[in-house]
Length: 219
Length: 155
Image 1 (tube, rainbow over the protein chains, first blue to last red):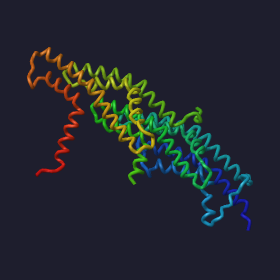
Image 2 (image 1 turned 180 degrees about the horizontal axis):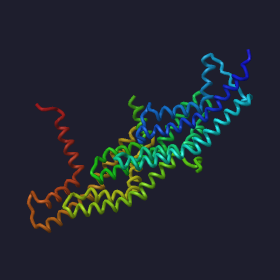
Image 3 (image 1 turned 180 degrees about the vertical axis):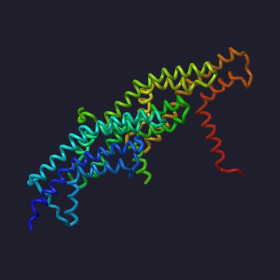
Image 4 (image 1 turned 30 degrees about the vertical axis):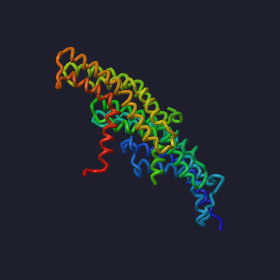
C-alpha cells in the first residue's frame, strides 16, 4: 500500500522543522549555561542536554540511516511538501524562529544577561556565568553553522559532530579560557585569596588533549 | 544587529584580550594605590605590590604558560606533568634568585636603618631568606637523601 501523501508531507514537515528546533535548542542551551554557573557546565545537565538535542536535530536524517540495519525501512520522502497549508506551516514556523526568536528575542535575552551580570556582581555573585551565557546566545547562529559544517552525513554523524565540538572546545576555546584562569589567579593573589588552583587549572586548560591521552594511557 | 557575524569563541577571545590588555593594566594602578596605603599603615603590602606587577604581565605570563605547556607534543600523556615541572623549575631557578636579590637589598636596608644584627632581627631573616631562595634545589636534594636513607625503615 502506498504511503498517503499527507503522511509523507507530515514527515517532510517534521524533517524540515528540525533546523528550527536545533536553533531553539541552542537558545535553551545558552540559558541553561547561565543556570549551571557558566564556567563549569554539568555533564548530563541542562546545557549538555540541549546541546545534544541541537546536534541530534541537525543530524536527524543521517541518524535515520541506522533503521535499515535494524530491519526497519525508513523511506524518506523527497521533493518537499506538496500540501499547501502544511508547506505554509513549515515556512511560517521557520520564519518565526529565524526572524523573531533568533533575530529579536535572542539579542534581547543576551542584553538581559549582561544586566544580570552587573546585578549578580552587586549582590556578591560572579558576573562570568551571565557574560558567557550572553556570548553563547549572541553566537548561537554561528554555533548552528559550525555544527552543520561538522555534519558528516553518515549514520555516525551525531558522534562525529560531538567529537568535532570537543576538538573545537579543547583546541580553540580552552586556551583562551586559560588566560581567564591566569587573570583569576593574579586577582586572587592580589587580594590574598588562594590562587594556586587557578594556576594549575590554567596549565591544565592548555593541555586538555594531553590529559585525555594520559587518562587513556592509564586504562 | 547581524548575529551571523558573532561567534562564541571570538567573544571569549575578545573578553580575554579586554581583560588582559585593558582592565588588568588599570587594576595595576589600583593595586599600587592599595600597596601605598597599606604601607602607610604598617600593614603587609607585598601582595598588592606584586599583584600590580602581575597585572601588567598578563600577556607575558600567558606566553610563559604556553611555553610550559608546549614542551611536548599536544597529545603526549606526560605533557601536564612536564608543564608543572617546568613551572616549578622556572619559579625555583628564575624567580627565586631575583627574590633573593630583593631580600638581600631589604636586609641591607634594614640592617643599615636599625644597626642591629641578632638572630631575631628582621635583617638577618632577609639574609636567611635570600640564602634559602638560592638553596631550593639543594634543600630538595637533602630531603631526598633523608628519605632515601630512611627507606630501610627504623631498626
